[in-house]
Image (cartoon, rainbow, N blue to C red; front, side):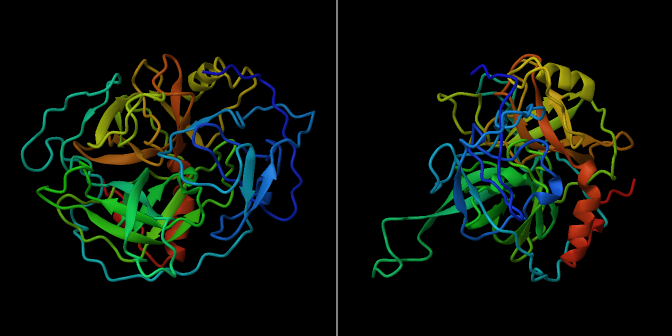
Length: 402
């Protein structure tokens, strides 16, 4: 890993509101850590302007790890900006989604896990240096794979051979189903504002379509990204995907529960899931079978102290909207797990889970005494509820009646 100085110098001219695009492993942004959060832009699927990162202010102390964090996002997509530049876009207003009548079993409720899966159980072997193991089929029925469309650039839309359906779906990030028509994920996963995204629920083995229950794909109608998301520090790293049509609720699909606002999670047996890489490095491999890894929560003081021993430096401050988990050797989420859920069991129930965090960033993967950092879902519960109301969609489906 690279050794970075504790101080970096950031300067940017802000006129109105801007949002900056990210890189997968190193984040190139121009926002200073002391910039007013109200000046952050709402994300927009429009043209943007590339800005050099060479403009620096010689007086700022990097207390939030700006430019130093590793997002746990999947494969990078194409960017028209050169390395060392960022893409800034104007703000916009979200339109009202097209809602549909949905039939699902509200009596069963959210957050039910199937520890033995559906069908014949599989051996939960680990095929990587980490302690992650294979999840059972439909063990975590709220798990969603976020895909982006990769239309071939070799064929023009004016050519005779052009086929709008001739596209590949490339894995981008993880997500969680909180409503048949809404997916919860990380804002950093949606860095390509022009990309066309698809949500896939009910997936388990991405290389095998012969399953007891098939997966379902739904195109994303639009994205709602937190208006104060800051790409350099990952503050407010949360987003909602509103689908064009809702998923059909089958046995391998269900919603995850969400915690109340400001709920404090202290569980020792939380679980993260994803199709991310098996370890950090160029020789790592993306997993095609959903993996699961048990992670203990790490308190804020310990987490901040541990992270100050990394390249983030002794002045690093852990933002209040983050929670931490892991910190044990080879016990961690990794690149490609970004946006996925960190779930913890309700203490009052057996086998029922709520989503405590969203996989956000870390310093590499699986290092001793270096916890992974997650967006705290509890800190954004009110924001999620407000967005759902604006979408004219019910929030009752992710509320646990214990």
